[in-house]
Length: 294
Ligand SMILES: [Zn+2]
Image 1 (cartoon, rainbow, N blue to C red):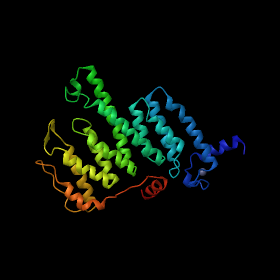
Image 2 (cartoon, helix red, strand yellow):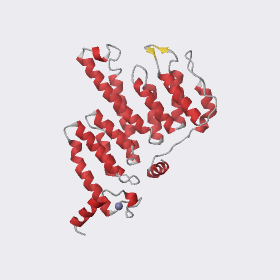
Image 3 (spheres, rainbow, N blue to C red):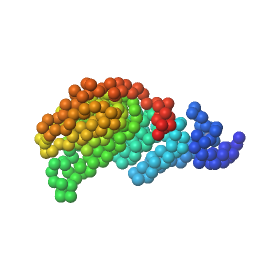
Image 4 (cartoon, rainbow, N blue to C red):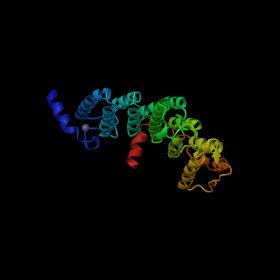
């Protein structure tokens, strides 16, 4: 076949998803779809290096769209490009890449890159601390240094949230470990905005180690006011755990009290068998099964 014919075929095939193609299989895309995908990726690539972060966000979204054309056979090349975008100088571009990776991209690259991204942003958050949040409220803050620090911190928190939400969609022991390790770092004073996201993702992953981490965090969080005022950490996680217990039909979750943290340890000792001891690795087969169920 001449190149011209292949390209003409590819243009026509671009719009047809691989499931409807008949020539594409779970093992490989057909020749025409391969050519169409390669051409689309080639067109998106230079935009990833554009000077404006908005253009780079659009490029990441374009790659996600191309990847979705073949949901049963995610592209390794696209996943690697999205992984590289996690190093973008703009946190907003990184956040878009994290979201895209968790949404149907090649599972191994998605898990590995988001676990490592969480590690990195944890370091950034630790350095930024509370971002001077306990001085003047945002509108009244005059010190440009504090303003800049708050802006950086807000961006880092949004990026971390995209990673945390993403890991909650990737049922793999490495996702559970990364989120469970992150939980002790979160406090009302530093990273408190992320408590809810980490809790939701750990509940969604439904693994024993993650639930255990929530139980420990509730135990260590002040039930009433903490040293910096009312601390919502314990109550937020308590509510998430209660919802999880009810949705699984597990009896007698402990009630909330403002006097002392509720005793989830006793409950957990009785009910831990209802949570998976191991999730194993998230792979293509698991991803296809989850898609078929959805
Ligand atoms: Zn095809």
